[in-house]
Amino acid sequence: MSIKKAVEKGNQCLEERENIPSAPLWHMGKVAVFESKDSFDLLQNTIDYLTCKGKLGKPFSDNEKEFMKELFEALWWGGQYHGFKEAAELANHYVNGKGKPYTINPQVYKESVIVKDAMTALKSYMKEMAAKRSSISSLKTSDRKFLNSKHAANLKQGRRSVATQGYILSDGALLVEQSNQRLKNADHRFYLWVNTSKNAINYSSRWKVESDYDFEPFGKGYVTDIPLASGFVLKLPDGLSQYLTKVGVAKEFKYSSAWQEVWK
Image (cartoon, rainbow, N blue to C red; front, top):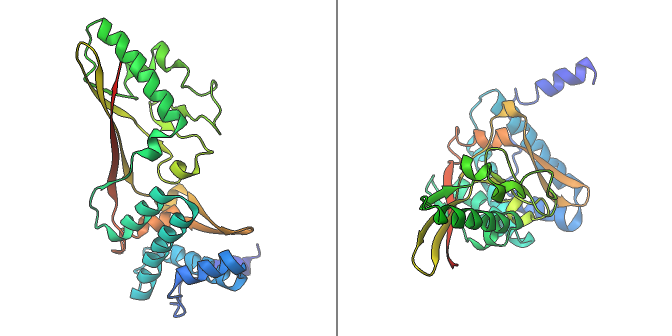
């Protein structure tokens, strides 16, 4: 990159823009259906412009705030269309939920390979602990005794396919199988909790996942890809998504999912 271009890039948001698109969803639809380069460039250039403003800590105009709000709402429509229902709901709640806790359908977790395998491992561990008359009332995948037990061994990296099985991280968080786009787009890394009681015949467990919907600041350099069509992938910096909380467009929130199981 020449010095001139570097200076131009560094100054790209020093002058206020007036042509902020008012309908991101319409432009995203044009890219998805007609592969419109004009609409794609308009969206990406606007994101880049607002990223520049965010990095400088500059306020957003009402039109700029509305663009980002509608962009996240457009992700809701796109997520619904592509079958990423939970990710769509979370994106919409980020800009419309006012920070209130949110609950998502547990089915997306229950169908996950790593979640099912972790549940099996925890149940095996609980049966062993119950036989020793140790407490099994509350456990988490980060429990050190569980992580060091034989029951967790087959959940660890190196013994599993990252793409189709996922694995448990050293801190006990579950990393979802990467082929599971529906869950990966909603919650790719999380801890699994379980509260259990036991009678003479059965165990009764309440499984739960709790997560925070938030984004890393600009300094982390993370970027979320938003594929619209073949060869058209919007780049949305996590820092810009996080900056929305500072300009009053979005609020971070906690979300959870829970389900019951009776087993032997």
